[in-house]
Amino acid sequence: MTLMSFLSSILVAQVWILNGAANGDDGHVDQAILQDNYGRHASLRALLLAAFQESVTVHATFVALVLRAPPVGPAPPRALTLLRGHGGMLLRRVADFVGVVRGRQLRNAREALHLLA
Image 1 (tube, helix red, strand yellow):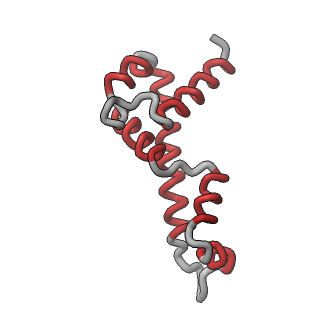
Image 2 (cartoon, rainbow, N blue to C red):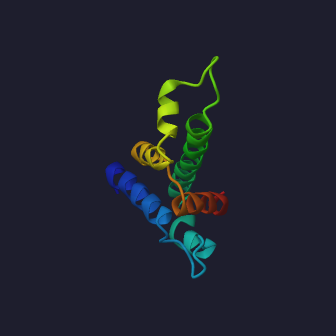
């Protein structure tokens, strides 16, 4: 397997897991499915762990810095103030644009991270 095809398989596996391909009948990530497909390959498992950790960290950072936006001076930054006036829809689009996972995908990333660790 070439390096490019290996990296592609990691990306595909990550997208599949985020979108529920490793979910059991209850809708949550199933440990048996994860172990059968990804547990035997230590390098793939390690890279998936890193990818899911990054997804969870990026989400937490986005929430802390953009959604809560602590003031940096006497007044909050004007750009964030303008974003907040749109009922959350604009912030969801910004999150989607920068690749922040949320909702079901975030839950799947957290569960897979826990099960692969």
